Structures are given as structure tokens and as C-alpha cells.
Image 1 (cartoon, rainbow, N blue to C red):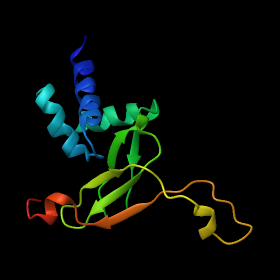
Image 2 (image 1 turned 180 degrees about the vertical axis):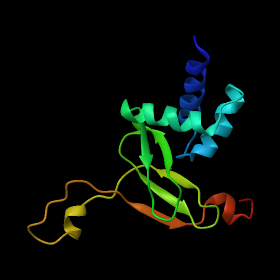
Image 3 (image 1 turned 135 degrees about the horizontal axis):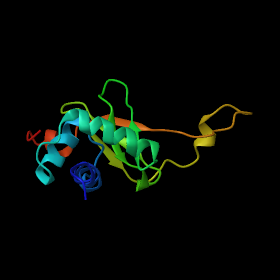
Image 4 (image 1 turned 180 degrees about the horizontal axis):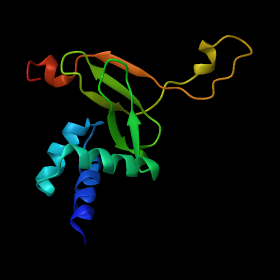
Length: 126
């Protein structure tokens, strides 16, 4: 196994262990625990490769830095903490979205983001 492969595995494992989407810097920090010496450029190159293979998805939420998560988590939505700015996964989905759109419109896809304060920030730990 080449050093590059170990680094990519460390990056992918960091994403899989996380319970929320991570920024490239957070990915680098987590991956360095598994394979020391991983730089931010290596993280970006690996993310580009993983996205091309459809193994990782980009999570873009206005006002937040780009984050990444494994593509195998299925359809879900996100919660953004207004204090720490972390993005969290929400399980489940809103039902009856068709009732919200005008007649003769057809919903093709949707993305819902909720905003508030996470548990850690709510208790003063964040």
C-alpha cells in the first residue's frame, strides 16, 4: 500500500466516522490522527477524487464554508448552529412538500436547512 493510499484511507475514514459534514480543515485534523503529515492540499486532492467517484458529497450552505460527507448516507437534511457554525445531519424528511408549491408546479428535488443552536452551544460548551 502506498503512502498516498494510506492518506486517502485516513481521509475517507475521518468522513465516515463523523456524525456531521466536515470542513477540509476538520478532515485534515481528523485524518492526521490516523496518518500523520497530511496537508490541506492532499485533503483537497482526495476530496476531488472521491467526489468524481461519487463517494463523497459537497454540502454547500450559504454563509458556511464548504463541507463534505460520505455519499452513502442517503437523503437527509441539515441543521446549522448559529453560534459554532457546525453543520449537523438531520434524519428523516418533511412530508407533503407538494402542498407548499403552486398548482401545476412539480417538485423535482429539495434541500432543507434548519438554523438554531446546537446542544453543545445551548449548554455553553460550544
